[in-house]
Length: 378
Image (cartoon, rainbow, N blue to C red):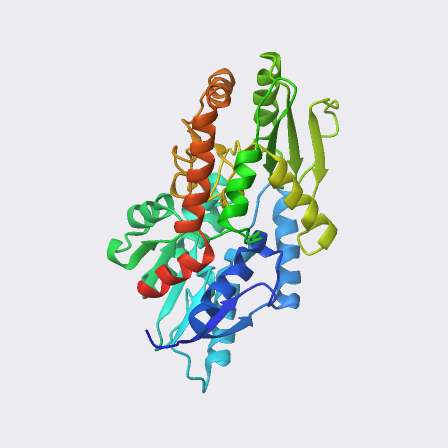
């Protein structure tokens, strides 16, 4: 395939390593693979966002959640700004991860969208206070953008099926392509195998669980604690490390739970601490109530860690029972804990899951493989 000249356009600032947990920046890096020429443009406008912020506040006084990013006004502003960016340029295509950027964009070059959710799923899964105006706008803007796009890449079949059903998008123009890990150390296969072999179980050695998320409730931290508590009651000494958030203020300290708060990957000491937690853990656990994909599961797989997670949202598109314990929705704490104990009691099974977890990452869900698949499907 010939090298492409790509305009990558986002509403956030260029080279923002934190936005969307790093996925936005990693899409940019992915597009640059195969030596494509990629230019990142930002449509960010602080003044307009401040004005719409005040509108959000006014709505909130009346108990409504107004989503300024799904404003018809701002979507039209995006289109005008992008047309100015593209004027007299010779780009081969445009890539965005936010539909509202291109909902009203009329250009002659192909538009590609690569994202994790439709707006329909976003407001159903993520918005606590639903405002009908924002919902109508969000769905309208998504539908316009998806119809306009030459091709759409969703990170899961969960999102793809919703786009087909709710927005009547032709299935032939939609591909499923996950995001890779946002936390890459590129450990060699030999190092990973040595790491897996070093994870020994015994009555004297505690089992270490790791979970990561910025939203205590949505990431199911309470359920993770209950699962590890049940395992401890079965005389299997276990600890749970929680990264990314803090417990509610009224929650009592629990002796087997270690809370680290937010660890910034841009700060060397904190990045190394996170790496150490992945290396020292036996399982990664993510008991989310809603999950578009669960990129952090890829991060766990890159260390050969088996994950424990419910089969909701896009999770089933990134892990399976070969390299994880994929749970049924609303499975009881006791049943989940017993599934984990079964794996703990079978060293061969644990090793097989660990190797399979890493193999899935290495052969399917890392950015190098994903980039090759992406450019095959354009």
